[in-house]
Image 1: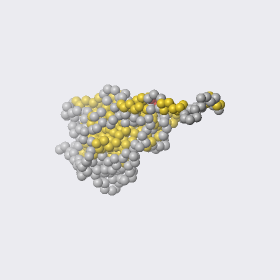
Image 2: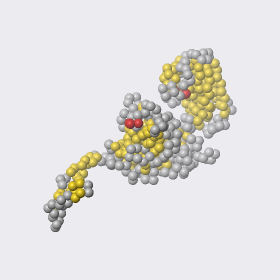
Image 3: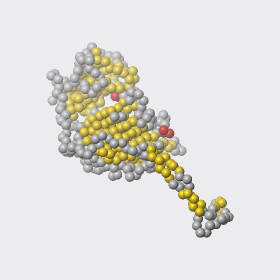
Image 4: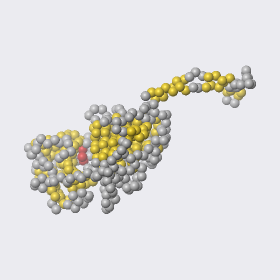
Length: 474
């Protein structure tokens, strides 16, 4: 809603004026009894003020619409950090009006590149947080933002606990990532939670079929309740999480729903470089490296049921022949390859190709090998991995010409650690059987993942796979 505020300006007509710097002008018409005061005309200045809208089922806890001329320091701290503080990022977070400022009713966090006389590049950027000012326990956080595009840029909106030491340092303390977008792929937004020791995580994502998250503003939100979190992009749910834990290595887990049973605060930042996005390059446009936040709104229900119990995730039973892999012989040609149930075919980081089930096998053709091992990838989900058990992996494979691939058993919900390590093998143009055995030494995980990675190996030769087995042998 727009409001007009009338500003009454009063001009005092002094009886002496100055003609120039250091030189007095002649005095005329001096009035000794009183000065002449003239009231200037009323000037109307338009000030935009956004009323934070109500939300059904919630009460507004706090919000910032970023309507003022400067950052509201009753809500936010500007965080200062040196380069390399985390994730091998390149930027220094600084408090300057060039990096953190209000622009057109939005908070702007801007990344700036500086090149010294020796050609060395350095980066500054902005980060704000509401720690010890707007901390809260449970609620719905809604953030509307527009992210920048560019290799190496990494905007985020996320939450950390007020007392990071309550359950131990990261990741034991917990982290709630409402939005992360990589500047080199602004069609995809990620929502993630981190927790536990060993490091656990669950992640959802939204991939746009048209446009990108850098083209316009989008709304990102999380509903955080005891024992449950739901994440949304533009009102569409992309992730629901109910299962997490925290513990110190070698000790029992803390009572559920720890670590997400303590107060958290909101923060936004624009990182430059780092382990995930990679570093900027000559294509990165720092003139437009601006992360714009239109508003942050935090709502809360009047009551939350805190007596919640951790869900029990059942270990999937093997098939009658002991195989944990469903449709390992690819006899079911109708199986979808785009869900998270059994088999799934994935492309990433410039990988191009397709997978087809036919004639009792799966055929994977590649048009481009991509930039990383998993650029062209076939996976089998929900393979139970039991601590102290031994397993055997077997499969038959051939290629249109000799080439290399990688096989492993990963932990997508335990920070992608490997239960069976990445193992490179060379497959020939004739059918051969491959066998591997390993012992599961990590914490029991009902959601292991068998992976065949065909990317970034110097070949786009077609690969055929069948008779895939993962079985417990001891």
